[in-house]
Picture 1: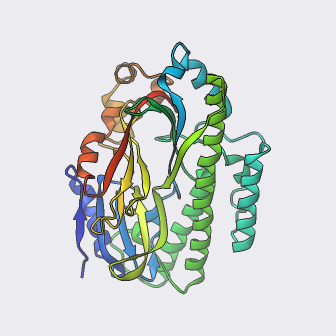
Picture 2 (picture 1 turned 30 degrees about the vertical axis):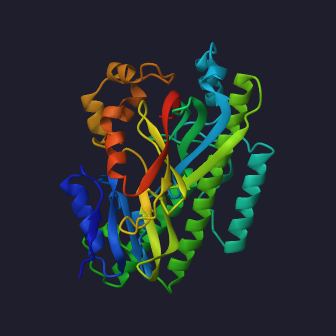
Picture 3 (picture 1 turned 135 degrees about the horizontal axis):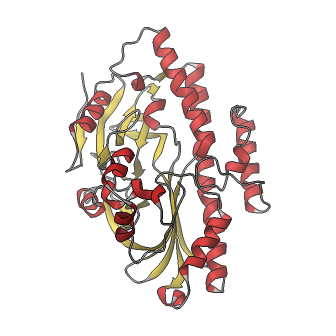
Length: 386
């Protein structure tokens, strides 16, 4: 018997709803499935799907960018500290400090924070028996951004306070871990003759070696993603401090995942709570919800909504696929939409044009039962990989 689907999205297509309903029909899902306001069709499950499971986990539902998420830092700087300065110099300094685009990693692990963070991950892998032989370059992936919708931004809030903002995940090593266990789950269900509506609904059952190994590796990848954002943020802060002429003083730092599975309690039961394109929104917990490039982003505080499984949207959510966006829009269209923002112009970013995404303000209206808005940010610098 299917559990209930609780939909917070006012704009959602049938394909996305059908994906979500397939999750509701899995026998171990509890207490229900929540569809976030930015929900759209995705691989494995709809992006913006949140659900609990008892005794099983779905690797494809977490996705291939384990631990992907946001980090934001409010600085002591004000917009007036940037007056008269050429923000293109800051953009170029960021590009020189943080490797961008898939396959671009650090040529060597730096000293200081990067070395310490790599050491922490080495210790965690050793402690939990995490096999990373599939990713011999994982150490130099730490501190790299990636491509697609991953980005680095400098923003101003409603009081013109300066924020540093970035979006990234567990890079190639997280992808390898995800692919390994997606295959493991499909192989497991095949050997057990378990009938599935879709092969991406393949799961691992609690009590098996593969289940335990996946959770160990998943925890490691989530930690890698967290530390990867921390490392890039530290580098961004160093460049901003040099640009302004004095060191950054952090007023607050917020770091949150939006692709992950963790143990939580919902509906009176301990479950494995999967957030695919959603952030934790327990009461009082701060989170970050970015718009698309050229639009607003939000700093929020959770309301602990149980219908929403104490979760909230992770961004604007796509309206058009990347290929469709490239068909519909031009480099000139993108340049018009980015007016007043220092960014990297070119054809490579057409698929990230704001028109390819849902209206972030409408998403936030739909999210009103889930979070309260603390700050609305506007971009002044945007850096993306291809």
